[in-house]
Figure 1 (tube, rainbow, N blue to C red):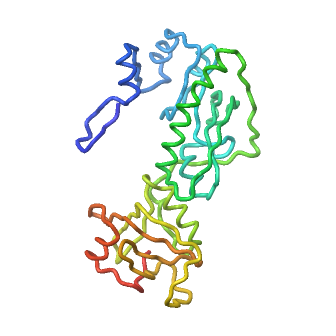
Figure 2: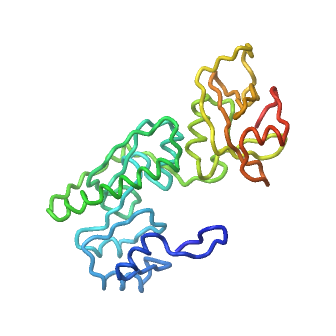
Figure 3: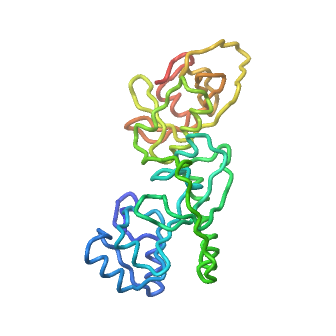
Length: 283
């Protein structure tokens, strides 16, 4: 159960609601690896344990309980992007494709044998939140394929090549800080890869600005020749956007943002309220 809504009330997750509606027992231990939890899991006598976005690492005592094994759905094409933030990191790094991996779990995180994978393209303007939803839907659609493999007994066990492994450490707020001297595409990938969390940010007159919607203009050409503007400079203010220079000819078109201590604003509302002008520099 998690705090939800503006009142942060403790409410059951959607999957718990479904389980309760179907009369299934729900077990939610604070520590999956203590003696009480291990005993309870053994009583269930499961064929498989399926793990999706679970916040605890399973000990060998739990991993060894199911007859077939513990199976995890991971949001990357392993062995690339092992770890807590594979979707964020894939977008931030400019990957063109990603997917999901069904694998048997072992004590070393995300290093187990692969059962199968499903690939999808990462769309050019897709955010982390949008890609997360598409991968979640793909996982749900593909789950029946996993169950058919289990039922038929035709489960593959493909060892990962550890030499090809890359790691996607957990995101923190500072990971969203924009360096306007980076290439425009790199800045845009950072913005996309940190929506909705932790959020890409910069500063204007000492106030933190969180950018929540933007577009990328490659090789921007303005009728007024601005030469090579300083990275982070306001190049143009349009009806619905603010154009910001980067370390190359790419421009970031800010559409929506949240100033520290304020509500979400459109670019137009921000310009009207904060009187930002062409030539001022962010960062």
